[in-house]
Image (cartoon, rainbow, N blue to C red; front, side):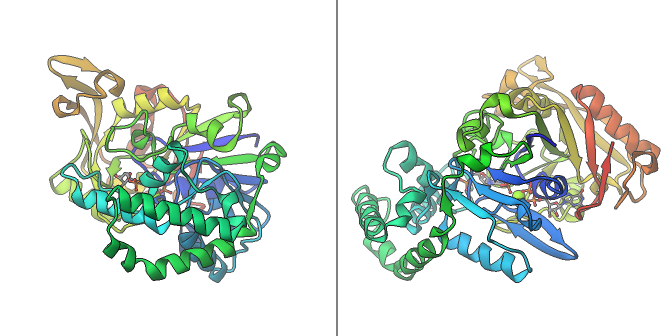
Length: 417
Ligand code: GDP
Ligand code: IMO
Ligand code: MG
């Protein structure tokens, strides 16, 4: 299937895990290029739900290599928990390989993340997984990399240095440090467990033409192109792939943007089509919109075409997969934001007003609901006429083909056009 990438088009949780699981059937390698334990990708094995945080969703296929790229930040404690979880589901961890250049998230990073959120007046609503502080150390050239786990004495002294830096800059207190004593022991043990998976993954990235790249988070959470400062600290958009995996731009054949049939966001920050009414509650309840990593309720709103147009532009998507169409089954009327208005000016692309969110007003078009179940539908012709029209309408306003439509959480609840 050549080299394809699955990328979140909105604010994350679009259903990337499910799509990767489906498309990895004939793939040799699935690789993550950014993010870390902040991600929560839901897949199903038979009827069992599995939430993956750092392990690529290709782990569902026993013959598929799973790479954790250099652009990721790896939390050894969380990764060992994930190893145990996937093993308990009868899956193998033998094909999981961690780039020796990936950066390591320590218990100190998690403390700094949580302390910084607690102190801040303008909270981002992070996952508390230490993502920002780990990338800060990386870009400050003070990071600990996976290759450093291979020498445990050296690792201990690097952690000492990290602790002293955090204490001296008052990012953590000596009481904080006492509270993570056991956690630090856990950390060193976990580092030993994951060490045998650390290697040079470049030959594996370049050794196949059957590679599926798995994005985490989403384009509007991108540190450069998202709703800054309410973003994550990596590049989920397609630009992150090349640096995060050592995969040149000209090797990527197919960029697939994943979009929900509506919009959600977890954490703080602007959200033009957010609903505060019964429709919002209905999307949240029917869509079971609670974070896969933190359990927090996700904010819900209508599909936002100016946001999607921006995302398509930034990523260079060739096609779209639309997920969770079935969540709209019970609505009499569905709204789509087709344009933004801002200080008397209109635009169909979010890029026009990317730093003026306070003033943006979404302009909606109403489309009729279909009022019957689409759950599990696997052919476009079997969708109710009005659901077909909803898809065609969005295709038309975004000028991009919607090649896959997801109609339920399971692997085969999917229309392939
Ligand atoms: P990811 O982070 O992009 O992988 O997405 P999450 O796993 O965080 O959130 C997507 C949620 O929607 C998960 O609970 C999936 O099981 C579920 N899901 C994915 N696609 C569909 C769909 O088409 N219909 C329904 N009802 N649920 C879906
Ligand atoms: P997946 O891969 C949705 C959000 C957090 C917060 C912001 C910064 O499952 O789509 P961070 O902990 O990264 O510093 O938090 O980003 N966030 C996500 N939202 N899905 C995710 O991942 C997310 N990962 C981080 O809620 O607003
Ligand atoms: Mg998720």
